[in-house]
Image 1 (cartoon, one colour):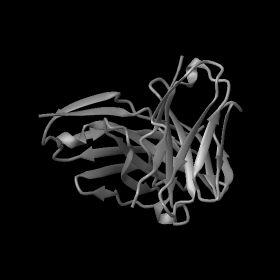
Image 2: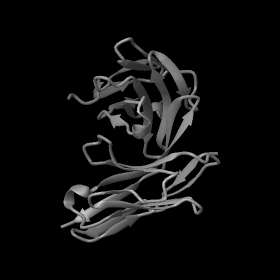
Image 3: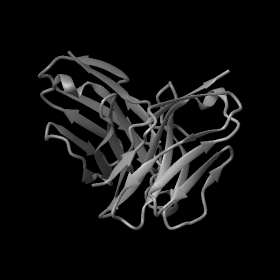
Length: 116
Length: 116
């Protein structure tokens, strides 16, 4: 079964602090892609960062970076210098490509609150 | 460039009724996916359409169906509504042809369905 587990339902940090969100996944596939999506209170989900499983180098996107441990099937998101606008639900996900079709499998989400 | 548009944004139905939700993808995107979001189950994949063909389907009963038109707009239909169908239904489009952008979904704001 393909599953994604986010063990932290909620987190809260002060503005400007660094926070790390955890994610583990399970798949028997060898080639896949991993993602972090963000859903702010307005509800529109947006892509934060993307990681190809075949790449050893961790992806970075400005203040966002990941720690990808393929053997451990771990994919954590680090947010540096957190800002109030980072307050949102964060979903870890991986993509399966099945017969040319794509299907994202999401974790349950982590509700992150950045306090002033 | 206009984003993904979903209509209606909010709707209230009673058990046994049926509902049709609409999604207009970003211009040029031919892949449209639908997800159901609930507090208990999180985000669950419903189905994906590409060029008017359903390529992948999630684990939902046959009451959930969808289609895609030649202009890539998509609709999903839920018949014989049950209380448990109350959820936020999210539509996402993507430019699937480009492997470097697999999994990069652009989400609409969702249609909030309440079943009484």
